[in-house]
Figure 1 (cartoon, rainbow, N blue to C red):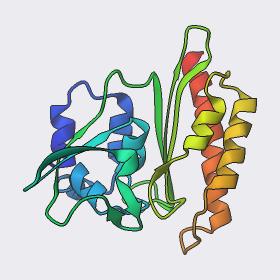
Figure 2: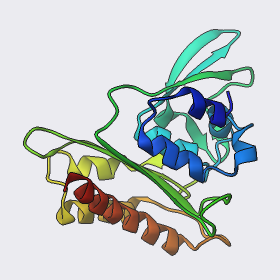
Figure 3: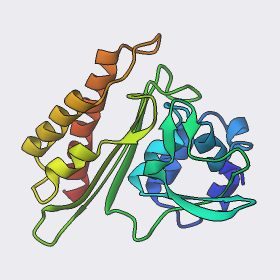
Figure 4: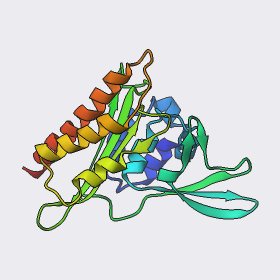
Length: 211
């Protein structure tokens, strides 16, 4: 199903989905492109993977051997490679509910619309009744050979307050664990700096939303 048709049918889609969709390529491409196709190409700068990783999506595949369910976080195995077998197709992508309380998608590119990402990121967070972080997901594209979740960064803030100190812990993990390459869209140092700045932006926007 093309992305534009998903948008038309998913009447109660979260706001972040529509924000993400407007940044995905161009209207003609959205009329043909599918989520499954975008994931199966396994591009490290594909726009769908970071958002779906932040939403803890799973991939349902089908082949002659039957069906299986694959956590998206385990789907990518290397540059342009996935766990799919040669005869295996993506049948569905499942996003669990309830959705996280606060989710944002960010795309950094030379042009805002109709351009390939230099860095793409999606972040999601839930809080417990005391205001401490109960769930954190920081997903990135363009900072490694595959789209990924910065799980060490997530673990670094669980159970803590979401504040400047927590952001600094996440940024320290990002700087230590992410290893992007440099190309004509941006150097490795630039990509790390962008990823760190987006975490700070996520904090700022969560504060704005709570105000």
